[in-house]
Image 1 (cartoon, helix red, strand yellow):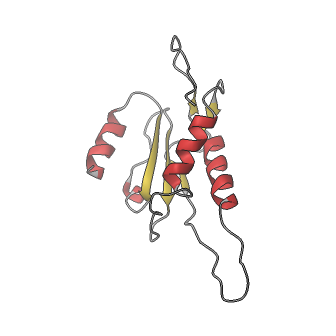
Image 2: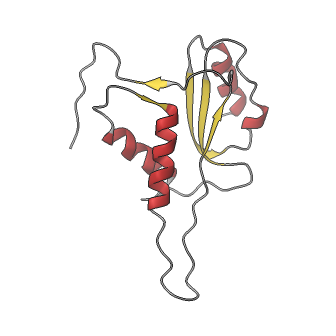
Length: 137
């Protein structure tokens, strides 16, 4: 998806915006701060200059999906809470060193960027009113 198209949609949005990017945050520096009272937050798989991990059991994508599935019945949570949980789970998934010469599997650290007034609250996620929540097993 072309980044300029995403920027245009976010700039025209009349609501708070949360972007979850399973890629590096390379182009986000050019993303303008919000000029209104709405909050724009971005969680990207890794920072500028790093490579996003390939899909797998410890990838950014799998971690976000697992958290959202686990949190299906939460009444609400903030983007900041989601980011902290992503970090927590990704760091727990790093295997320990198993003797001399064995390398620790490294994962790039996801980044959380807030493009709004620093005093703004984090975007909150909650079920839409009137929708039935069903947990799939």
